[in-house]
Amino acid sequence: MRLGNRIFLSFFAVILVATLASTLTGALLLSQALRGEALARVQLNLKGARVRLASELELLAVTAELESQGLAERIPAPHPADITLRFPGPLPPALERKGLRGAGLEKGFLRLTLRELAELGVDTAPLAGRPLAGDGELLSLFAARRGPGGLVLVCSVLNGNERLVRQLQENLFSSALYGDKPFGTVTVFCGDTRVATTVLGPGGRIAVGTRVSAEVRRQVLERGETWLGRAFVVDEWYLSAYEPIQDPRGRRIGILYVGVLEQKYQDIRMRSVYVLAALIVPILGLAAAVVFFMVRGMARPLSRLVEASGQIATGNLELPLEPLKAAHEIELLSKAFSSMQGAIRDRESLLRAQYEELEQTNRDYQELLSFVTHELNNSVGSLLLNVSLLEEETSGQVPPDAAELIDQVLRDVERFRDMVKNYLNLSRLEKGTLRFNPARIDVRSRVIEPAVERLSRWIEHRRFEVSWDWPGSVEVVADADLLDICYSNFVVNALKYGRDWIRFSARRSGDAWLLGVANGGPPIPQDKIPLLFRKFSRLVRSSDGAGLGLYLVRRILERHGGEVWCESSPEPGTRFVMKLPDSAEPAPD
Image 1 (cartoon, one colour):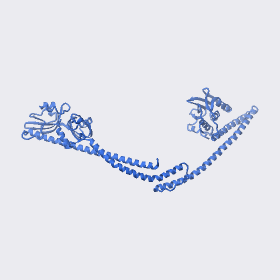
Image 2 (spheres, rainbow, N blue to C red):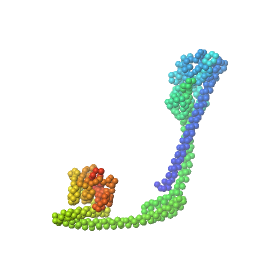
Image 3 (spheres, rainbow, N blue to C red):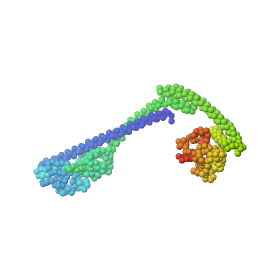
Image 4 (spheres, helix red, strand yellow):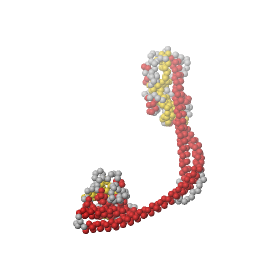
């Protein structure tokens, strides 16, 4: 993707995300504001419903006063009563249990069963057809007044009192529908059962007889707290307010509810979001156009810089870059780019010259190493032959001290020969002329035993014991001459730094052989083991060797597709292990 497109998309993405975030935040704030306003209205309407019920109680108290004074026949009662009872004597126990005292004026709410009313002398037949709660319970407004003729109790039954709840609904909300549901609803509960309500259930029927939710019942009836919030009422979500209704004893005997349909506020919120979106989309399009032209002006010179960078990356350092006419910062960038191009060109020329010089030095080093090792190899071979002939000719004819001296000279020449061989192999390895000719060979008979025989004089002199942990025939596909270099180095190192014994081992590991050479030398510190296989790395000061043997072993094993490592523990003894696959594929140098 081109730079200009990337910058444009980045800017546009930022604007789009910011716009969406603003829209969502605005919608959330609007939703919270609408919900808060609705809940405040519901709370205010609950107070209005409570005031209306209090006025009903006041009118009922006037009716009780007229009845107690015997004036009911001459003065019309302001609030007709559903139940009127007179008690010339003391207050019945059933009413005492409800918290009435029987003195002065008392008013409030009573919950009585049909059985209790029958015991008080009320004809319950007209009341039995009303919606009842629990065991035939009725919730009533009551007023009691003791007069000359005794105590008068008047009650207005709330069960099935559609007139009262519809008046409350009309005064608080109006009776208009939203969809097929009234927008505002009022309910009176006896206990947790709706006994008078304007809530419509399925099919448009008045939802009397249904119960309040368990969550609302626990908070309002059991804990005596007001509920203000979202509630599922019959079959719709309402923003609702519930408060407990108490009898004269302070016991919670019912609930007063008002609520408004939540769907209306959700629709208002969605319409507001649509209007907001209709305003934002054109603004977003205008912003995208402005950003496009701004980015186009910025990206054109930057694209030229990117193109020039690509040319430099391919090695074209001579590409001229004309000064760019753009913003001040981009002009400074183009000048800095031109300066950087010149510096890179100069550095490239210097590095190329140094590289060519190093290449020539390396070639001279390899040629010198190859020449010296070949010359030394020839001279050492001749010296070894002459010393061997001298030892054979003088055997038994010179004093023991002289014989020991000749033997020592022969061993030193043999060690020097091995050192020269290592340099020679290093020269071939670094020049890439070390041949790799794999074939299936028996490791013990083809490689190890000839190496041990070749070094037998040294082994006998050091009085080393050679032992085998060998499972019969071990055959691998490998270059016998290269493996000979490996085993010769292991044996020579064992003779130099080890003690008492050398043990050759072999065991199978999956599709490879683990070939080990152990000796009784002192343990090697764990932090020194990684240094063993580096070129010219020596752990001890010695005039024997140059630190090339184990480096050559590692490179030879890598050529075979294998690996080599050292195992050393606090116990005496060190073991070198070569892992060789069954079939060797030559690895690249």
